[in-house]
Image (cartoon, rainbow, N blue to C red; front, side, top):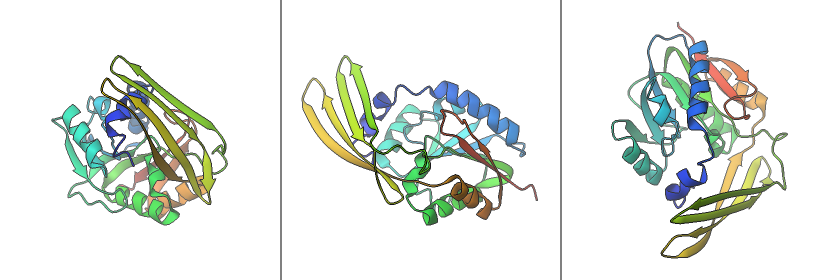
Length: 235
């Protein structure tokens, strides 16, 4: 997922206010974090949209599984260290005061077992008193089957129309994302399937508790999807 979309990602999601989201995130981090440092790891960082603003307050590093997304992130942020890895089993030889996993990227784990592994992997990279911040994908009750999705890009040298219909299969949300992309050289159509795990609030809370984190749930979060914040014990 996102291999073909990497070059289009920033244009498609230009509606996101990364600056406002990061300002709110910083307030929440400072409210909950108990460790004294400012080292932050952004897991599933994508092209580095949040990193652009996080690095104003933190010593930031990023991790993502997609090589094309990381190439773009490194180009945008040449002074930031990036790692390629799977959020369920990555190992970096250091710990951080903050670990974030934003824009519902956690849904890519798909299963409860992999959710538990991902939260545990991220928690293992926290310093004592550090905070893990996860922005969830909608719960099964929140997810709207049959919802029509549409995104449009209207730039001088790039036009994009993307459409989808929200479906579900068991505990997975399923969206076939149809893209019509026009540049000065050609017009193409392609489809990429987005499958995301539909986890309940209790399943998220359980994953944090199994990772031995003191967890709280912020109902609103950065963009209405909520946030889970887990604090590692100081001892």
